[in-house]
Length: 85
Image 1 (cartoon, rainbow, N blue to C red):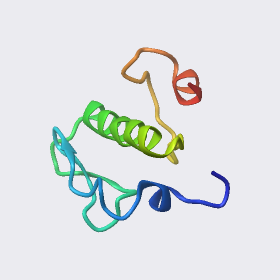
Image 2: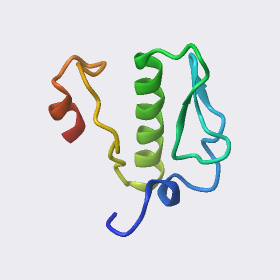
Image 3: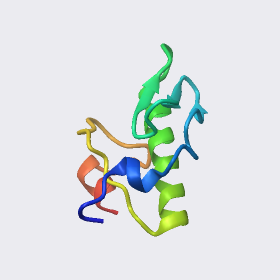
Image 4: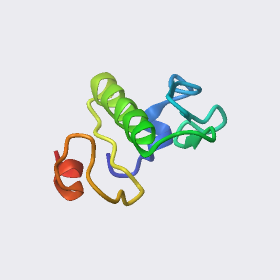
């Protein structure tokens, strides 16, 4: 929602430390995804989309990516289309 940031919406740590492959949610700031050294782009995207889906299910809020993703997302649609739906 306008006026709220991702950290506020994600909440006080319920996602901290979760990981997919070599990517994890920062234990210090749950709005950051960390590459542990061997994360693939797919690991990062899957982790981010997992957080987005859980936030949507828990609060009804759809988080938006702050970064610009290049290439095709996991579902194969052009990035602009994937970000809107």
